[in-house]
Image 1 (tube, rainbow, N blue to C red):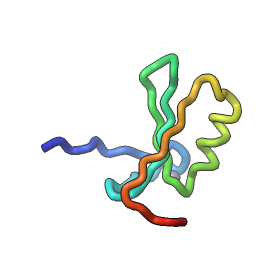
Image 2: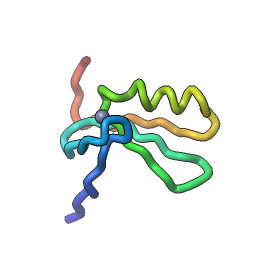
Image 3: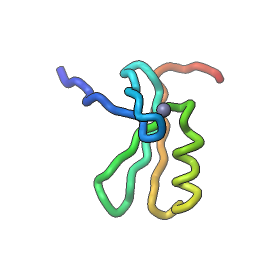
Image 4: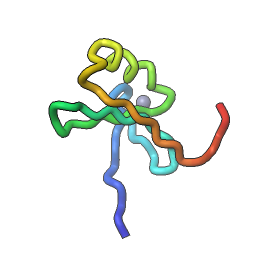
Length: 67
Ligand SMILES: [Zn+2]
């Protein structure tokens, strides 16, 4: 019975719903994490492009949806 903490998109600051897939960025040199809507992925990509050695990007798919 664990509830996911409420997470907000680092780009648009709106909440990311539990059932929504999201993009997570994890910093290698710290524990900080950022979450993004898949529709806000471009903002995440900018960060990764600027510092590819620092950020690890992973995408969480909730269900198989071809888009
Ligand atoms: Zn967003």
